Image 1 (cartoon, rainbow, N blue to C red):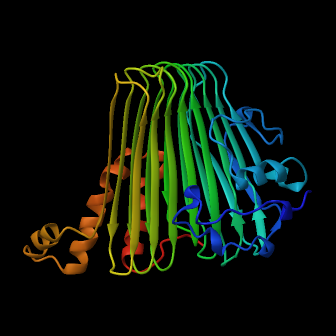
Image 2 (tube, rainbow, N blue to C red):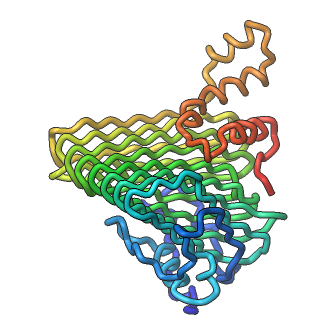
Image 3 (tube, rainbow, N blue to C red):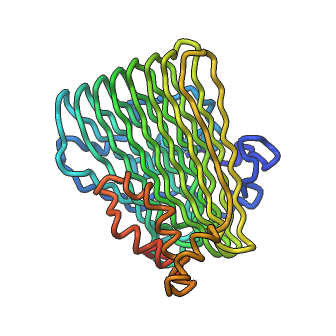
Length: 367
């Protein structure tokens, strides 16, 4: 296995890594290795073959950690952490596929790979969970590649419940062909520094994508999101809603781009990022962007960063609700539209409980 020393790490001065904590990363603290990956699904659609059949599904330039992922997953024991899910034409997979990556050892650098390849007019739901036991200090660099063929329907859920010393630098790459539908949901509660680059490319006419995320950071956690909605065909539609909360000394960053290409006329794209700061020491940054190369489109973007609304808090308290309970109700209401968009496989009720634990001072992460 090639050494990692040949790679030059980025710095927070580079735009792609602006506001990040990348300067704190010491690669010398980690050794590439394998961990436990389990899959619960119909065996006919799952393969543990190490070959990456989909390759690149986006036009974004790979950053250094994507390059590491390709290098480190080409051979060796890390192949055990590859999962490929593929459907047949017209196949509807009734039960969600559950992929769980579990780590309990410190000092590891892990490269889980997941490929989802939905054939024409097929349908499936995949839930990918990242968990840990104890309090390992390790680095995960997961990659999911999603391909939805014509009229295929894919729902993908990512759940981060890692311990407080883990770093996660993740990538979601998706492409949708004609009349396909891709829905991705991200739940980020765990980890020390968790970063996700999530891009979807609508390559076929009539393709649609929905991206939602819920993130909650407390203590000194940081959640960092970079998204791309790439419209490369006419009459495509994308809708993004990311909502997060930060408390104590925690931080969050959101940077998103809607890109409408010259040939993508009559496309619709929407991007919304909302953030709650629940403590004076908490910090959130939100940077939405548009890049439009044709006129006949509908696009909007919006972002907010701010504390709990005083009027909402006062309304609840004036009806006899204790201040701490009032804040909890406001936060639940803030997250409600995201939770309501999640598929049942994401277990929305359990998620509400975890958010509640974070509000009460429990980190809410299963370790």
